[in-house]
Image (cartoon, rainbow, N blue to C red; front, side):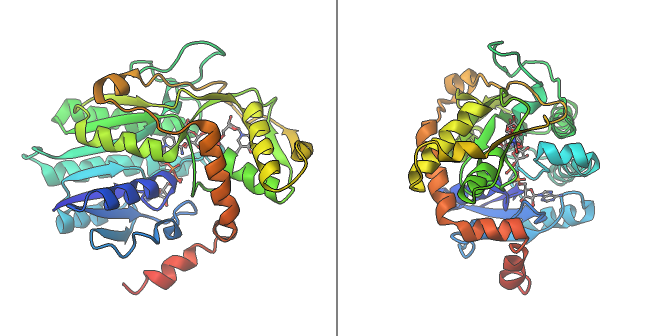
Length: 351
Ligand code: NAD
Ligand code: DAU
């Protein structure tokens, strides 16, 4: 039995990743370490919470002594590091929280794992999950991000993620610490906190609330279904070459306003509204400060080296995602009201 640590496993991507690994690898014991910030929600994991190869631990990656004792307790064989502050708008309002968790927390985790594994890195692996935002902003029609595109982060969020990527690589080069990194484009899917574009707009359309489009809505993002991101992480965790970086993306660029029109079309249909009814909710608002114009990933290396390609077409994935949110209004109500904390208190506090 291998002990694998997933950090941030109660969040959006981490919960899908934990589910994939718990169900697919019965010979792995998955330990999910999460601080349960506003973005961490154990209701995302009810279907696996009682599995014998799964353990949840509440804790903070910034707490060095706690991490040391966790490594002593479980003697981890591998780490998949998802824990982070992840929302760009929050990083503009409160950059220090991002520097703390994303930089100091990652440094703590690297330091603890290195000390624990010291002298015997054989078979060990530290996988750092990162973002395409570290590469900066592309011009319209101006090429793609490659693994060797120079870093040019422009928000406190992307700068903190870029710093953490640099630390991970520094540990590889300095200590031969066994790392692998991936940088992924925008994820969408079930269980994403409704501060991000797609779940926020799904919730607002449903309740006839305004849809705040930043600037002119011309910015471009490259969208990937979250479970496709997780299958890429699975392949890279097992087969990626140490010290390497792999870009992950869906080759699926959408200008925000076009995506919003597609969302409105699908939702009006599902809600039994006349086509285009919800367009009147579109409200152009002040642009995000330093708003990156375009992200677009070239994932050829991952395809050629490890054979990964995304499985889902965007229209289908978006429809599936909308259906999930429409069927899970209680989940949305709980996360927007902060009620999800009660789930931990009820189910875990006395464990
Ligand atoms: P999320 O905000 O949904 O989840 C983050 C999780 O980390 C939460 O469960 C939170 O409780 C936990 N956490 C935060 N601070 C912590 C701390 N100090 N100690 C322990 N746990 C802590 O984020 P997400 O969207 O799932 O992103 C996960 C990772 O993937 C992040 O590193 C992010 O940068 C990266 N990423 C996200 C996307 C995307 O589109 N969402 C794309 C590419 C990369
Ligand atoms: O590219 C990967 C990144 O994608 C991840 O690293 C981040 O963790 C993740 O949050 C996401 O960042 P974005 O800033 O691209 O995602 P967000 O959903 O916040 O915004 C998507 C686009 O929609 C962006 O151009 C801003 C715009 N937007 C967003 C919100 C929340 C709006 O126009 N209105 C909104 O209310």
